[in-house]
Length: 272
Image (tube, rainbow, N blue to C red; front, top):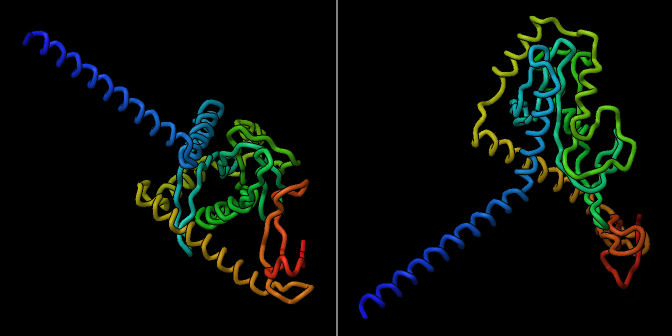
């Protein structure tokens, strides 16, 4: 009788152990899936793919890849995904991981991402990368002919408008770099530039990344507050009440913003 009870206990213990292993594996899987879906991971994946393309297609003796560079600026820091240095110029590469349709042009302040019927605006990456190139130009004492700004999109996305010549999808940016055949820097200048970048860059660390993200967050908050302050002066053309931003919720213009009267539905004043 005691032997039977012991066998039952051992069997129950084994079943509970197997169940805990299963639950642990499931919990780990859920954590991994959650990490894979974060914007942080997608951004790092995009940067990895761009780095990989450079290492595969560019001669490492002629093209020198420096990645994840954080440089100090007058108002904080700026973070550059990839810098490729060669005698043919300094190529500053900004990586964007997106899905859906992408609409944009060189001079637009914001570009648009469309996923099914949802529209999202994001900062024109050319404007974002402009600051990167300007900081490098100042540090390295470069001319416009010696530095290039490149934007590379990674992910399940498609361009739905004519993009500028320096905006690419995937590894196509390599063709742009390889097409530059006229030397604009000497071998010695390339060496000096590499040393200057490394000496000016902040140490790669979690603290450096956290400080930069906080700086970016503060800039966004300042722009938002400035925008909201400017919005307060918009008045309804019908009744003079303050206007507020609204979204079109249905129809062919769904997702677009417009100014609507704050007294709605009593007043239906609208400014497109």
